[in-house]
Image (cartoon, rainbow, N blue to C red; front, side, top):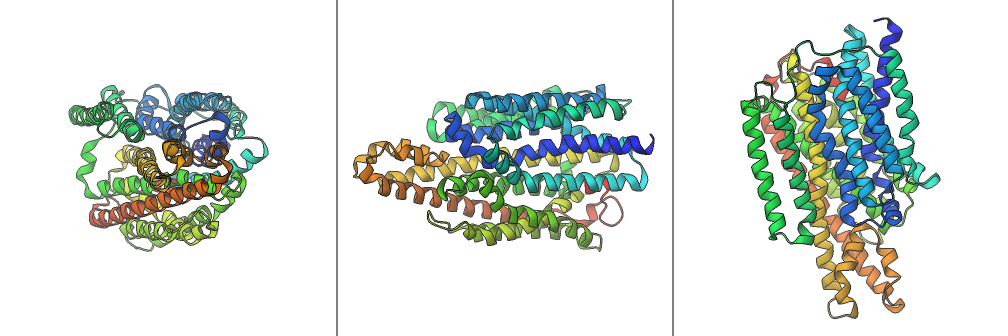
Length: 515
């Protein structure tokens, strides 16, 4: 491949990856506006995030196998078309269900893009240039996550929330033409085939678990539906494990977990997503709905966290190259995240946003320390030929962490708010409306609902509801901090330097790609 062609390949891959990762964070700051325009419930808002994370997690490994069979460039192009078409459908959504279903299709396209991106780069580059390309890939990931809230806020304020999706369409179309013109096809000469049994049982288990967590408060945790969903999750997981252990070429190679360090890296990936990234939804609702900031202003207030994370990541990489054990960054990073969450604890209905600032900075440093070290641990403890599978599993744990974290924390959040508002309104004429008020408060619709409350009671009811929201958010901070500290302990116990298969830290060049 000539030198110009390989750099065009990198450009096409970066466009696709930037779009799919931007859409993980760009949506958060627009959610209150989406809720207002589409009359969405708290459950709807959870699904707007989870539909994307679920399909991305469920189909990431399957997409890699599919690409090995029919061609990586072909699957990358299919992913671009799906992602762009789904983005247009998201922007045109006229109801929460329409948006949620479109987000699910977006996740399918995103899985195809993510699963093929590293393979296309590895095919195009060799030697030192490959390391450079992977480093640029990793920097692009960091940039997408860092500017997501700001881009989302700017587009929402200037053009409307629809444009956080519409903007993907021309970019995606341009990437399709670039890929067709400049990217060479590659495939596995001996593809293993698609593990349909594993894919179906894994997807079913994940969907039933998240649905059960999201619907638990409304249906009742002991209701037939919720018990059936959790029982179905268990059955599907057992079936998934049985299928993967019997498969000659499983999509999710469970034998990798015999290596304690690989298991530890997977735990860290799940914990950082479930304890920190899933909280962005609830922090955003607080900043916009309780503190009253517009989307762009909310996005600006997330910058301390994302910018610190962006600049700490390369520093971590340099320190790791000097021999500091990887588990120091994994466990130390989660400790910093836990401390950051404790520093955020204590917000009130009348707090300034700066109450969150110290926590944002400390947690951002923790995220920056974890990401490059996590990539190193995920692929550095397996043989090079299995690094693709290892990287895919680690990314799957990240997305599963976001999906289940949002659902589980949301269940606690909604229950806490309902309880606080019911107690606050006990003995007043508004007591019979406590449930409706709690649902409105959790979804960020409090100000709209207050208009239906008698004027003389609006101030009191509003204060009770905002205090309940703040109290619920503080509870989530505490729970997430405990999860982060537990993850730090497990990472320290399981990730061992002797498990790395290559010299030094054993990180193949692919590790840099996930920084």
